[in-house]
Length: 94
Image (cartoon, rainbow, N blue to C red; front, top):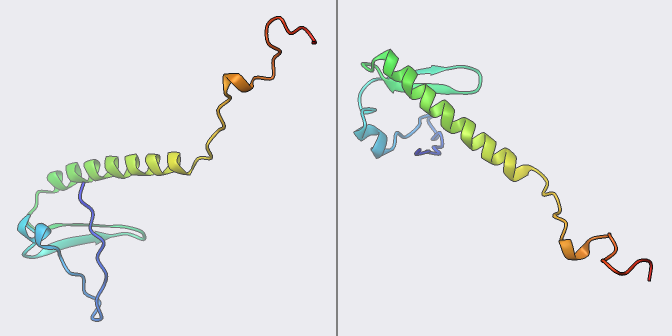
């Protein structure tokens, strides 16, 4: 999935990358925000198609969050069989 990091310019505007403009974000777009995220789509886009796209994006975000969580987990040390604390066969207390 493609991801864009766009900065807001001095006039509080965001540049729409060429790839997105060529994909239909070149005319009027709708933006539906909430407190932490926003959905952006062409004004003529079928809402059922938008909902399907949201499901795909949501699955991708969940996958990314899971990967990040795994990366941040402390690594458990693996026990090497050569460093075992059990006595070796035949060494009965020698």
